[in-house]
Length: 180
Image (cartoon, rainbow, N blue to C red; front, side, top):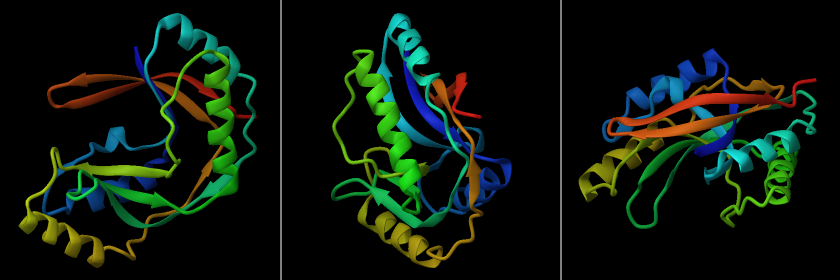
């Protein structure tokens, strides 16, 4: 099963992010119902491994904390492939990310080694953009650098199943964690 751990976003945040994504001049906007903050992408795992992880995650408690956004950015060397809303630096979020990584490691799940860059994916550009579309995107990011996206409280996180379809992924929540 393809799965990930993420923080769900409140409606006012997904609405604001969706408005930004839908005003993009290029790319495929992330559907509002799919907007989330990934903690860890688990990839394809067996049901048994996810069940073991479930019990490890149940021991993680989350003290309520606040997150905010500090701009837009892109992933993709050379040509942009993803537009995202960047989460402002937050030590509590970084610590939570490390806790869920350690829990996955204890259950034998091997995760990709990469620096955690907390973000919410707003749009995808397939194999990348032609130079003209890349310029339009650059202008869009400059025009929306001060976009007002509300901050929000985090009280826990969830495990999701991700099923890929021709029109994009469908996310289904499997379990919630951390709320005290």
